[in-house]
Length: 346
Ligand SMILES: *Cc1c(COP(=O)(O)O)cnc(C)c1O
Image: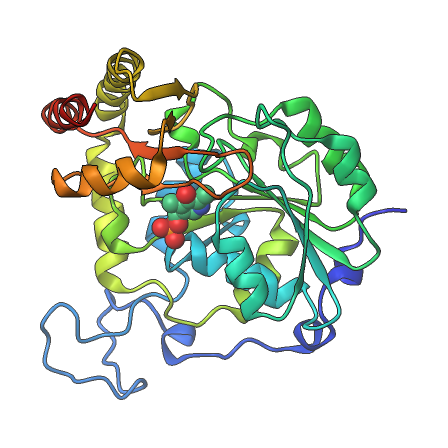
């Protein structure tokens, strides 16, 4: 058995030619050309032209930062769009399957249902590690995508490199590593391993560490061949001009480091404070910007927190998350308020 991109690509996608948009053929609006090709409104207001469908400027800056070729990057309207494109490129509705490892990000399941793709679930162990042998046993002929969320949402931990390497080496579909929280962890991104594994896909997002959830920008990193397929099926203008500009500004400003330091300290402080409150039974270690916190009664405490003006996420009911709330790390001031209210409830 050997990985073949050709073999796992859907027939209709293999044969599909990308829509060629006006801005595809002539995108350099900074020339002296006059543009009569896209039926745009000619009165300039800064946004009257279609955006660059290839996000050339943004990709150039981002590729340098990631030490990748421009052709190894695809941007999407959030990483959720990228995940959807992966389903649509590689999973044949009502025939293929994907494998997820609960408890994990709910979007994989939603997208599988939307695309009529079967879901195979192989739970993480109780300490939220990959059950590598069970995953390998669970993989079937029609399993096309394997979702690895690291750091994992909602457990917060980075998943073991050794387990992921085993999956990459023994699975002939795509291993999709969702690194939405990677910047909060001390671990290396799998982006640096792309040359080693033709079946590796990594996704990241501007929604978390970059502080730009409102612009909806996700990134996908993979081989040039995989990216070329995704580019063919993506909506031509999926990343709008406001988003491209905002992302360029964020990359330029580069406020990341300082905020990450603050949030790391706050996470430790919040974790310590929660551990001293008697309705808190357990605070799980976290490599992300949130804490999974087991309390005495999640439903009850969730309601009481809301009454106190504090909104958290109730994860009770998810695999291995009995009586757990997921709490995002806020600013010092916000965390103080959270701690105060939890103490009051307690
Ligand atoms: C928040 C989150 C994302 C981000 O999705 P966007 O569409 O980019 O906002 C992706 N994956 C996981 C696991 C997340 O928790």
